[in-house]
Length: 232
Image (cartoon, rainbow, N blue to C red; front, top):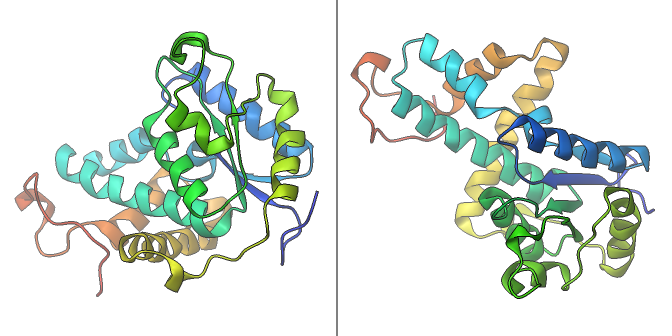
């Protein structure tokens, strides 16, 4: 396994469904398998933020749920796009589910477009079309999926070896992705500064500071209030 410049282990973005305990357990198993084989990982619900938990904090602080949900979604989008585009060198994609997770599909498409090594795990037959995975999904991984989590590290190593190394520069990205990466970089930097003190309340503090509407108090906000990173 090759090494990433600067901090050693190649960092892998683990993408897949995270909406119930079984799904989170399977994603953790995938992340653990990668880590036990020398990879560093980014697992969004563990290493980033979990929407429902931070949303509860924001509601307790007086934000109306639709407004808080809107700017919290903007924060999660920016953070995960930054992680995928800049911090992570490769991606492991869990295709399981009655339908593949929509967010993970989007992330896989971004990884493929950016030229990142990408492999997929699938042992769920519910998504098959005439015995095969949808070609617009499995085509992103050269029509090859893995049915055993333990085989993912070796499969990713092969994908890395077959992928020419490249660097992602902010100026190379489309304008909207560039904005998301810049916003996510700011949020991640603050999260890293918090270190062991980081919890859902601390994350909510940062999301409010960086993404909440700044022109109106919480009690006056409406559902379609503008969102964005504060400049002051």
